[in-house]
Image (cartoon, rainbow, N blue to C red; front, side, top):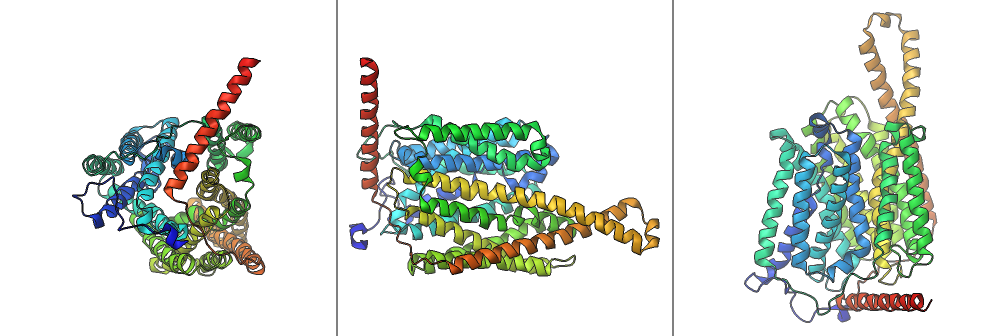
Amino acid sequence: MADWHAPQGPFDIPDVPNYVPRKLKPYLFIFFVLIVQFSGGVYLAAASDMVGTTALMQEDILMAGYASLIGLAINFAVMFRIKFRFSTRTQLLSSAIVLIAANIICAYTTSVPVLVITCFVAGWFRMQATLACNSTIQLWLTPVRDMAIFFCYVYIIVDSVIQLSGIATIYTAFFSQWEYMQWIMVGLLALMMLMVMILVKPVRGPMFIPLLGIDWIGALLWTGFMMCFTFICVYGNYFDWWDAVEIKGATIIGLVCLAINLWRASFLHHPYISFMAMKNRNVIRATGIYLVFFTLLATEHVFEHSYAATILGFDETNLIDLNWYVFAGIIAGCGFTYFTFALRKWRYKTMTAIGFALAIVYLAYFYFFIDYGIEKEMLFIPLFFRGAASVIISIVFLTSIVQSGLPFQVFPQALTINGFTGAVMGATFGPAVIGELLRHTVAKNAALFGVNITNTNPDIIHVPLSQLFGMVQIQALVVSMKEIYGWLLIVGLASLTIILLSYSSVRPFAIFPKWSTIRHVIKHLVRTTKNYQGQKLEKTTSI
């Protein structure tokens, strides 16, 4: 198998002229990927600065950031079709133009719909540009097309950029203004465009494949469902959940979009996401694991910032410096997964157990050591393990999707489901649940502490009411965090026990087909669509 996939000669990129040294060509596209990944439109790390200088709320900025992830996930189902329709040069130039416009709009708009739609479109083109670059250097990374190896590279880029972009955004805002981060990215994207125009030729594939047979209505409906799901999770606490007409409306619209999609998938020849992708065992298993695993790590979004800022008294720069600890965990997790899972072919069960074990260490550390006087350096261990655990689970289960046995025309649809459940649901569902649990737990503990303080210390009546209220709230917050960390620790231990008691001998053997094979599959898909549409037209005419 390895010999069949091996290239005939030294790796080369025909899109780049020969006056560029062959060994430097892959690094050119890695440079492009880094620029594209840094261009997020909205930078969640600057949310507090944006709230202070615009009329936007924290929830508005989060919604825009997650809309970018939805655009990225929706693109998966058609990214290969677009790749074989346009040259790499065209994809990179058009994506850079869209991302430049998105960064400028996000820097100055105060309209929430404009911000959300802009970030959604930016996410779509960010994914397409990333695929254009990564597919170009795939054989350089793994000549045998082993996707376990390839995904280690993908996640070391994507997850690392998430941490580094936050660091860059905060320090940019610290030394100047948060809008300058957008302008820095506009300059880098303009530089990328210049380099693409000079160094990348408009090379087309041997076959022209038109964009026929794509269910764009289905794409719009799936986007509506994902947006409504995200809206409920992000704004639920603000609107008091289903007591508000906004959450009720989003729930109805989301369910209607989902129902129409499922109905259309029952009779459409090529639905945007088919039942074959939805019912695949590996896809269902990955969705279940993501829901449990990222709910365990949801304290990252709900607790860590509040704990470090409110209780430990960290300022913005000290808070963002914690990203370096997560970044170190991501690098270590990718390296560990590469040597064990990708090269030595450790079992999926083993890697999943390791990922959950690291998450348990993260939860247990905070449960036992959370306090008022903890030093910043003491947070290295839990944040390092959280970064490593997250990237291990992501690589392992994305590889399992490739190894799911789905035909290639259905495989990108499974990637869309994986992108939504892993990135969007993982970042919104868990924090919504944990945030609501924290709210009720803090209220309960604050009431208990208030009664205990007044009953046990009569002199407390001489303390100003505002100071007394602050003391009670901080103490209730710490105890509530410890309590929830304890419950999550129990869930994590139970999940790890189930994983260890289950049996699985499957090892990664996810080999990506040749690009020529993919091209022929897509060409056959378009030809079949043309014939199907012709038959429908003949039947309609005869009737």
